[in-house]
Amino acid sequence: MACRCGGDGITYRHNPLARNTIPVNPVRKIKTLLVRYGIGAALAVTLGVIMLESVSLRPKLVDPSYNVPFLGRPVQPQNDVEMILIDEKSHNELKQPFNRSWD
Image 1 (cartoon, rainbow, N blue to C red):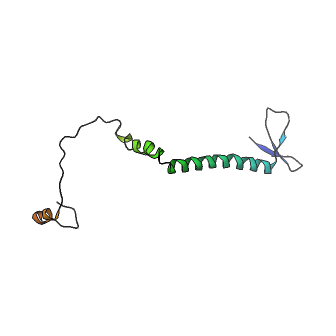
Image 2 (spheres, one colour; image 1 turned 180 degrees about the vertical axis):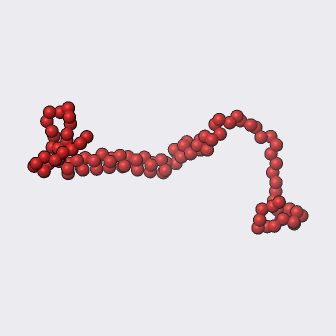
Image 3 (spheres, one colour; image 1 turned 45 degrees about the vertical axis):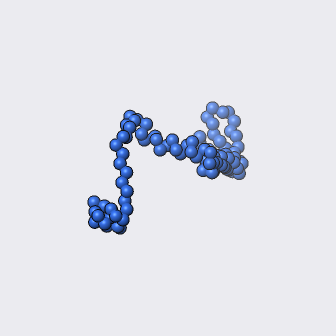
């Protein structure tokens, strides 16, 4: 939509289908845009704070999101699970360092 400036210094909105041109007040236009964008920004911030601070919504939204990468995979039961106890006796017997990963 193109705008043209008349001889009187007022900017007019040009609509090729309309017969009359409507004067556009620049201050009113700025206020209208600020109100529109301000309402949208306020809604976005409010919704974000509600989502971050809501204790009851967090488990319902965050916990299932961890499963999303695995939805396409078949379920494979794990029956051969082993637990290893790492203690000082094991360090000494296997001669493994305390401050690095084991072989």
